Length: 410
DNA sequence: AATCCACAGGAAGCCCGGGAAC
DNA sequence: GTTCCCGGGCTTCCTGTGGATT
Image (cartoon, rainbow, N blue to C red):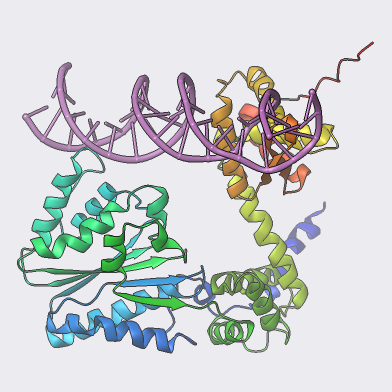
């Protein structure tokens, strides 16, 4: 490569017109000043929470809806407006947002709440009721209404932490000054089925369901954001409808739609294109899918990686699908080669199920009659991509293994 | 109709690291 | 230091099961 060529490699980046004005607008963390097609929900929630401004306890609310239907953004939006209004009315009011996917145990939730009110609680160590008492004292120090937003509240079911909901719904009877009200946000429509009926009735005093956006509504949302995000005229006509249509197929997920639009723009920008085209959107779709998988595989613990490797080896060497027992046999061999502890089949079975939930493999339970019941396991990702990803892990990079050929029976 | 395979998947409990309090 | 508590990964033990085979 000569010097001239080197100079030239930067040229396209320098002379090209930027496509974006403000990319941040397309991130789902951004809250626009208006939320299209959610006016009713906003009114509903605002109406329920309004008594807080007079120092009364609002009813608890349970909000349902699939991912990307605007539950979180709408609730946060209303809470923010409420806090603004509270300042005007001189009402003592706090809204606290907790994401139960991250903060997922009774201890952690109470500890987080306490910290919000200036009590320092260690990450672990105290008995849970001590944390509870600390929180209670912290909020009861003055007259105020505390609204707790529990996002992804359904995640508590899997963690067996639902008793924290019960504790929080009952806390008002132990408070003299402060008042607590809860907003639970759930992705799972069947969430209350897993709850104790006492919790169910007190948490679900008011229930609001967020319906998925349809393609038309997604288009409106995208248009609104695109106006702020992109320079005028850089989006080809079909781009927004295509993003909307692709996301609508995935149960009307606005978050996906926005990601799609943003990544399409980024790809176009990188290619030095002056316009975002439908082809960019399709590339973006592929990129998002494979990025998600890649990240999931990379962050897998070693044991899971070895299990995945075993599935790969089996898939390459056989024409029929693998079963749990076969995977376990190969897995054991791989562990010996890699010098890693061998886990029990019970545990490996769970690891396979985890790979399934991550969407890396596809497993289903089948009965083979006399030959038992097992999981049939298939890869749901390109085999070469997986191999490459696993090779990145130095513990696995040197391992090659092929299934020994069946012993011939004479 | 009874049997029996090859697991699934629940329950309980162990062990360990991290952190606090004493 | 010791003692307590928590959470997560894991094992042990267990009961359950769909349907081809006997």
